[in-house]
Image 1: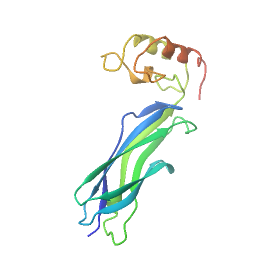
Image 2 (image 1 turned 120 degrees about the horizontal axis):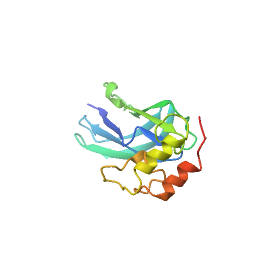
Image 3 (image 1 turned 90 degrees about the horizontal axis):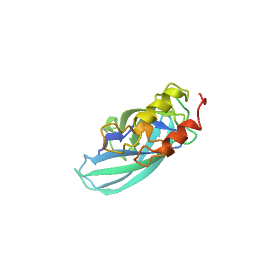
Length: 168
């Protein structure tokens, strides 16, 4: 029998800033008894993020795909459903497990730490509260790491301040 399935779609974040690159992991398994080659396409809403090919996946083996989603130009402040679909194989009868829906990701204006659709003093206060922390510290907040360098410093504060007053 032929049966490929998607068993997981994982995003590390549910909120990101416009222009950020987000890694999304997709796990596929071959539940059939024939070695298979097939495509997996990752989507946000009805928009394709990309397609990757899994080649020669043996029966009962898993494959983990890593997709990089650049959020430039993505519509802001809506919950984008993240999901993946494996192409159906000739003769495959169980197609329900070819789709896996993860959840949602919201894309925000750069520097809108609290997600209220405006960059204001509250966002400056939030980045200031995390100042000097780095990834792994108890007070470190990924939303305050505007430039994604794993440390909250003056560069993150500047990115919030230069966007003060910007709103959606």
